[in-house]
Length: 154
Image (tube, rainbow, N blue to C red):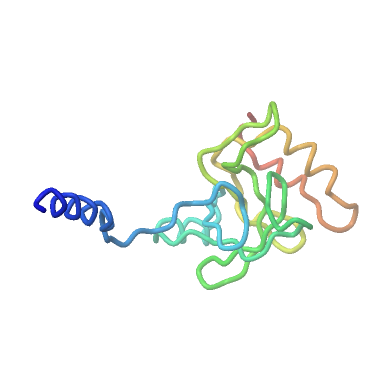
């Protein structure tokens, strides 16, 4: 009988959860709804949000699948405002010769496509040139200014 009691105690010991603590969700590997992002330009609203520890969150991805990759335009909630941004680096698995980043990086833009900041602090993938030039439309959204403020290309 004591052997059965010991087995029962051993079973109960392993069935109890190991720890009961609160934790934050980790940043997602793909950019979708409510993904935490990192602003990598020197815009004032982006700097303030990152210093406060309240990074922007994705509200909407402007493509058919709803999952953002490099070069996609997203709508973000930052400091109680809605701003548009362009994804310049993602954590998810990439195609060959496209770098994978440690965080999901964005650059804030205005409605006409001009960047809010004047400099991008992180290296930008060189394939972004090809992607954004294909998506730039004459007399509408022009992403070439975004490429011109980048300091390094990978």
